[in-house]
Image 1: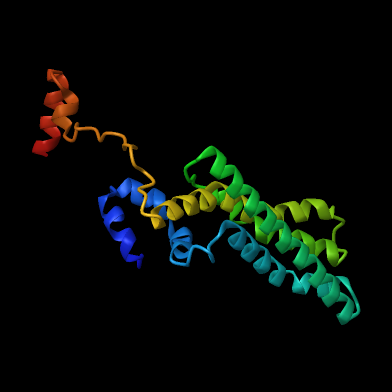
Image 2: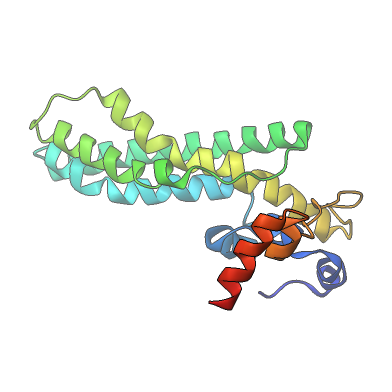
Length: 204
């Protein structure tokens, strides 16, 4: 991954656990390659709102008979949705700046399917197939992006800003010691019966 020259010295001093905490998984690594002003949590949240807005074009076409009415309502909703995600991104950054919380792994198995479920429910509601409260669909649509920003990206962006200023964000922090019991003999200790079982397996 390409990083500014002034980052390289600090990054080289970090162990693998701290590097993984700093850069995260594939999605966060992609965002970390962007300039810090562009990868601001508010911008990432707004980008999520933009993607959801694009996916809602077809449901809005189903809801209104007139194409101009569909487009105007879709444009209004998408703008409000993007603005809400942007504001929530700012709020997450403020909270993280106050609490100094480290990045957390969001529950992907729950969050990742939610946009598809929300769009599906909204499409069923707009096409009058099912009568589903729009608030439920909108909540399912809104939650994944701001949750990812709050749990994972906003804390990680704060660490990247510290790194950009030449400050080691993990200065004074230590990783958990790795257990030195690497072999079965060490685990068995002085238990003669267990050692005999281990020897039997090794001979096989």
